[in-house]
Each structure stands twice: as structure tokens, then as C-alpha cells.
Image 1: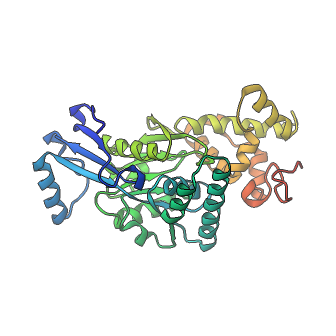
Image 2: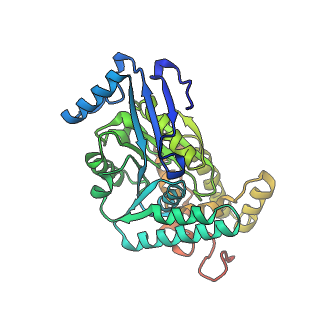
Image 3: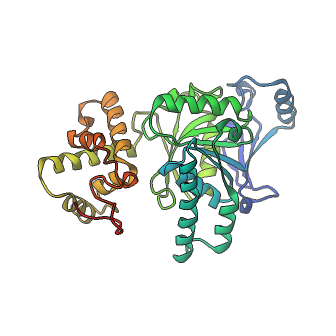
Length: 355
């Protein structure tokens, strides 16, 4: 048992129960909640059955939540990466997308990534086998939400789409389930308002490639409960991630910096300051970045980068106005690796071909 959370937050303790972390279960024990908070469920309407169960546990002085089943919504670059690390960590993971093709590609990606991990000695044969057994797919969000303990939304940065996902997931998920979003820019308070449980929602922002990047940004909304953040931190840590807690503000920490650097790189390319390869090389060797900003843009998707910049320009002002060349690339369908061409050309057998 790892304890020591101040009693004012409900005496939080983290327990690994009988099934243990090996099988992907995290048990969170909340004890001695102050009466004025009414437990962790004071912000949502509860069924009579759940009220009875909650009150019985409250009288005993504790309430246990076991995170075993995780649903990831969206099988794009980020969603498939999150689903992979979730399944690899031992969680029973369901990846949801309306596209059967994307779901098939995600399974192929997971197998290929685990095979590469085994060759590098970073993934054991047993871990790879368990990952395959833990990962399943579904085209129906309603069904995938019904048994989930923890839901991670990872669809494109479009408000209407995220709103639809949040409304559907929260309407069908069990009362105890926690909802999160992988958004890199949108307000967690706004996203939480689309659910029926704002206290059980926060942003859980992963980075690409998910299996290699160690950070998760946690961003609370106005009503997010401390216990929700504790649960998100615990899940992230079992996935092998480190966390930072960020106050709500457009772009959080990393997206604001990354958007500025990436946009400036596009402006320099547009102005003819240097070739794309030399801009990336200068940033990598001179500033010790693991990837150049133009390479990174191709990796995350230039359309995603443009959407982020448009939102930050709208909320934070002129310094985030997207470079015209970036907008031109997106209009031309040059979105990066996923489309075969962005700043660089990926259509040949070699991974990256200079223009």
C-alpha cells in the first residue's frame, strides 16, 4: 500500500489487489471522505442501485475503484499508439473507430511495434503475447463504453466530433468510469460540459510516438475532482509514463511551445532561409531536439498542426497565426507521413526522401 495523501483529499491510498498490476488492474481506495464532499460522486446524478452501493461503502469508510478495462476512441496515429501502450501495460483494451480499415491498421501497427520492441530487447515475448490478447477493436462506441472503467478520447481536434464522442461515451459508460481526452489544445472545462460527470473528467495528453514519449500532461477542468487526477496519474504510471499537472489554459504547456517552433520553421522554409533538411538539422544539432520541427510536423500530421495553430491563434492572438505555406500544404493534401507526403516525401521504399 502506498499512502500518505492528506486527509483533506479523502485519505487516498493506492493498492494493488489480488489480481495485481501484472494483469493490468489498478485499485484505488478512497477512505474517510469529508462529509461536505459527499464522496467522489457528488457531481453526477446517481441511480438508486448505485446510491445504495455507494452509501454502504461510505459507511464502511472506503470506496474502491478497480481500473481493468480501458476504451480508446479513435484509431488514428495517437489513438492506436495509446491503445498499444495500454494493452502492453496489461489493461484489457478496446480501440474504437468507425473505420474498419483504420482498426485493421492499428492491430498491424501494434504487432509490428511489439516485434520491433522484442528485437531491441525492450519488450519480452510474454509482454508481446499478452498485448495481443489484451487488444481488441470495435466500431460501436456505445457497446465499447458499457464495460469501460476508463475512457480515453483520441479523435481529431474538432469540437463537434469530440462533443459527440463525450456525450455518447458518458451516456453509456458505467457510473464509476472516468473520461479523459487526448486533446492538445481544447479546454477541459468545455469538454467536461459535454459529459454527465464533469467531476470525473480531465485531459490526459499523450505525445507521439506514444510508446517512446514518456510524458503525459494532465489538465483539470473547473469541476475535476482530485481523485480523478489521482486515478489518471496511476493509469499513466502503469503505462510507463511520467506526468505533469497543468492548469487550464489554451495549449497547455507543450502544445504552445511546439506550435510556435513548428510554425516558425514553416515561416523560415517559406522565406527561403534554409532548406527543410538544414532547418531540421540545425534544430537537432544546435538545440539538441530529438527531431526537427518539420519532421515532427510530418509525423503528427500537418492538418493536426494547422488545427492547433488556428485554435491558438483564435484564443491567444497574432503570434500563433499559421504560416501561409503550412495552410497551402494542407490544402494540397500534403499532410505528412500518413498521406505519403508532407514537407518530405515518404512514397519511396526509404522512410524519408528529400524533395
